[in-house]
Length: 128
Image (cartoon, rainbow, N blue to C red; front, side):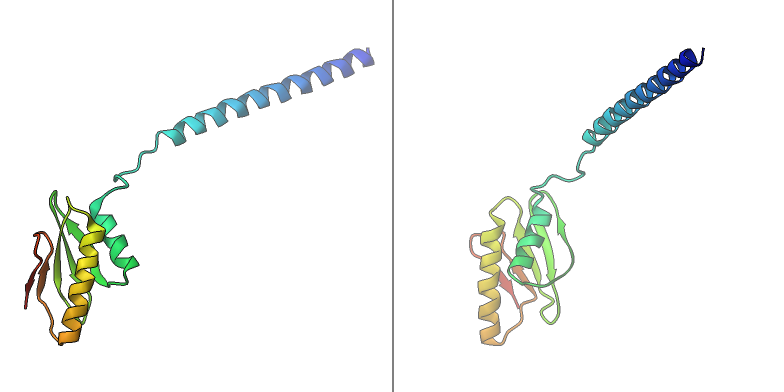
């Protein structure tokens, strides 16, 4: 009788462990499925964030966040420049930032400050 009771206890423990393993497997599978449903809110190729990243790489300081529309991006440079810079969101932003860097270097050499630089055109527009 004691042997039967021991076998029953061992069987019961085995059954409980098996149920626990099954529950953990099901819960783990549910968590995996939930994690797959998370969607990034913005596309990775967002021009607004891309221009901010390129400006940071080129060490061009700007205030706040870039403001973007479908075709243009506006960035306000940090003091002492306070220059408004317009980018064309449909064109290569790295080329436009390189052009901005050249314009800023030229302005520094000339000792001038621009109020606005518009890179949306084939010939950049600089307003003093």
